[in-house]
Image (tube, rainbow over the protein chains, first blue to last red):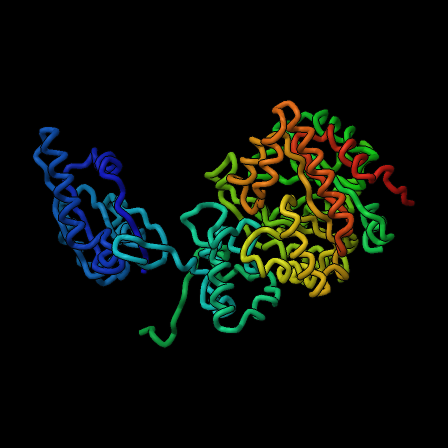
Length: 222
Length: 308
């Protein structure tokens, strides 16, 4: 899933300061799963904004909505009525959400309430980690099913570098050396010979480096 | 001859090579490079010029190499893949050759998190292995990565690094084998303090026949003090400093620690000279270039061979 985290309240309050009528818009997709932008988080953020504004002697006008997905035009349509009298909307979907709103509602100001952090998953309750950089040409089977592009700090395809020590990456004791993990896994599978192959230069044109990406599925088009 | 560099000639000729290192200044003063060059001239066969080492902004390696050439020293251009994509890397290789540089060292580079610009975006379009393949392809096939022909291909003597002390430990010689397969001509190792581990590494290297494919130069760095030794042990990634080295430095008066550090360094070089498959040493006297002549002298490696 796309993992995101809430921006600090002060940053959000500063962004919204000039605007009176606010809509807090959540999303029932990935950000609900990672507890950053679902219905519950919409309620929390809306309450925090109201409390802060009350403290400043204002009469807060903050409305709430959580839609199925903010990355789908048909659901973004559902925001038309709730947005009508609003000065600004703060979206707590991943950054796709506010961009969809901005693209659809030309006269509305849109603010991101989250920092979209990575494509990843949860390791345990409350701990999330990055697993994919969306390079557009998956080759993790060459590495025991683990992605060195994402999980090696230097994205080495022929690692590990000389900074791998005791299973940790040179940049931090909190970062596992994925090349140690790849090595150990292939060793367990009896496939260490896979690591003697030199992996050639990667074609990054399928990744973000090839420019903003677009995909057309003819079989799905109406 | 692949490049015709002095370093290549000495190694091919079977003589024990000595290389040095010069870290360019954090400023634009060429005198600082010339001063370091003065200490190393006639004492080492080739001088590495580091490429923004530890991800700290310094004068470019290419500029440092040119300054060394002007001083009559043979440079070894270090090039990291952290800061340049394949377009810039290949361009700089062409430029380096045009300026008279004949040796280069292909490295991944320290992560910018350690450096003075941790907010930088990194590149890592290629890794060090792929950079080796690139320089080799440019030299031997006369082609760029994209298979287009180079009108005047650069003829580089291709170097890389090897760290016998990093983990997974049993994979280190195998990875060096990958560098050999990628086309590297010589490697310089991480600073050696744990000679027992180095012996084991070389044993594995010899078993795999890698010492027959690649010239291996053992890396040494003299310790200036016990403080430096402790710092290297605890804070430098991939460094193996045994307690006995720290104890030896601790065991002498503070004012004699530098002397003891140099003694340890010379002893290490002497052990390396005896080690089968080791073709030379790489002396990295960090901001201590003025002590390199005595180290090389004490190790019995002067005068340096003269080649045509």
